[in-house]
Image 1: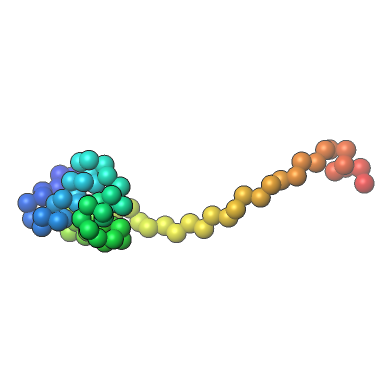
Image 2 (image 1 turned 30 degrees about the vertical axis):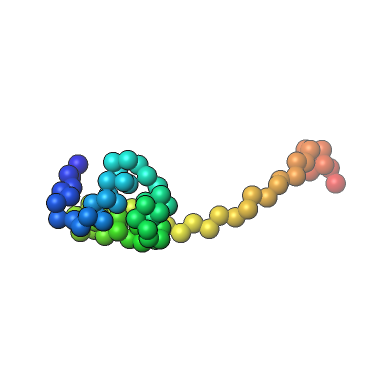
Length: 81
């Protein structure tokens, strides 16, 4: 596994990285701590990953549909009209 050197990062980037991967904080908590939006915190983390050559998980948009109830039918109703 590739080790990331935190020496070339700004203080804000270093803090965001430590909060995320050392302490396991969520993006919302990091954003509140740094005084930025959650998308801003995500961009900082992604920028660090991209500049260091670490693998970035691709963003996949998934449209989930609402589960619909399935009405149970007895076999006699299905095969006997």
